[in-house]
Length: 390
Image 1 (tube, one colour):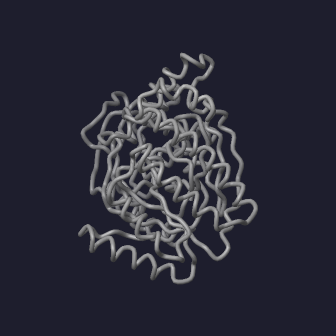
Image 2 (cartoon, rainbow, N blue to C red; image 1 turned 60 degrees about the horizontal axis):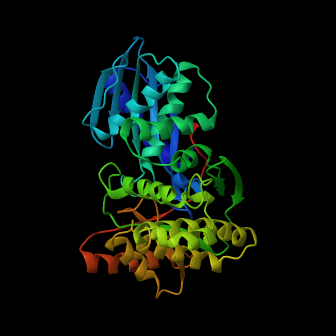
Image 3 (cartoon, rainbow, N blue to C red; image 1 turned 120 degrees about the horizontal axis):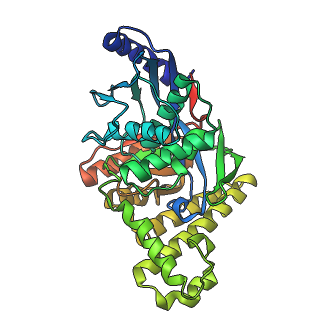
């Protein structure tokens, strides 16, 4: 058990006892994730390179011997909620909807969910692009499985989380985040083909370098930001490209030569979106090849290329993220940086030399605050295992 987990566990146990006059039957840990490269490629059936990290949500669960009463406590939000499992409806509480959506997915699969109590807390910064939402969904789903004596494959747990977002919350996301939280392995990244849903583990060996996340502390909410526009735009682009290439189903099927030949049929905005996705898929493969060969220096350049595309072609960055990336360009110890996650806020991913990395992060944060007046945060992360019973 990690130190971070052991710090959260007594807190959850105490609140559980106070709220429900007994102790949890079980604890489940669900990690956040990073994606080294391959942003917005998942819902275009492309390639991604994620990993689970040592920031997570910890859940305490217990059956409450009722047929239908669900009682929830979110310590980080200082929130509580109680409802009947027989009548699952969306609420005005965002965090509750992620959990109720999971219950609904169980019910759609004819998996009985009986009354239970749940208390949870975490150390994944909300709205940071580290996918606290997928950790919430997948950890909660695993807990319901354990409580009900149900065995579901990891892929099914990931799908339950993803379908919660798509069907209950109306977020048109791909399965990257839930896959990462569920399948994570210590010190390994995962090269996944989002169409076939096949993947391989690749050891993350960075030599004298490390990964540092810097949070711009601009919060984004996928249900209200421009996130949902991007899948729609990609779908529009595919429909226009199908006039020349009727056999393509998504941007994964489009080659650079096909795009070049049909470029005049696309509005510039849609052409930009396509150019980014095609280039980003290629960068995922290049990144893996360099990683397997132990070539660390080229990884940084690929990160910068990815950010440039996210900023100018896919247009999901923001001024604060761009500033954080720009500050790194004149620091020799930083090999590369890019915005990470859905965009419109959150963190940058920085590949830098281990030596002096804390001082370098402080330097970037100092420049950032001086320019924006916003206090950012730096996270030094390790790669950890996926959802697990503690």
